[in-house]
Length: 175
Image (cartoon, rainbow, N blue to C red; front, top):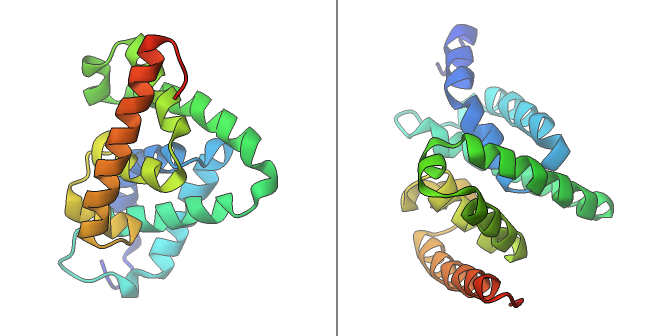
């Protein structure tokens, strides 16, 4: 693949397109999700020489997707509208996600999406990677560009915050 064989790369794109779209959407790309993913795949192709042979491809690619989603957020002027659209699309993507379909009712899924919205960006990223994208700790660290210890500590804090928000929602109050 390193030689840039287009057919091999097209196979990788096909294999990882859905998770790349879910990642971008869950990290706030909103209406720009497909553009973020397209840009990420283009950058990945252009930077194949930086990919370490033998390393897992998915975390390497998702790190590029994550960085593209972060770049999108740097233009803060449109952020509110983008987040509103993001969460509308995210709910649809969560419905399509097999593990979540069987585990969460529509009401619980809506509560989870609402609670995720209340987390700060970094907490949302780590929860998304570990639980919605089902990446392991090492892959999450690679995608987010953080040390594994940071993934552990931030995930622990994010889950406590998420639990607080969900508990408050069940009580009918706001956290």
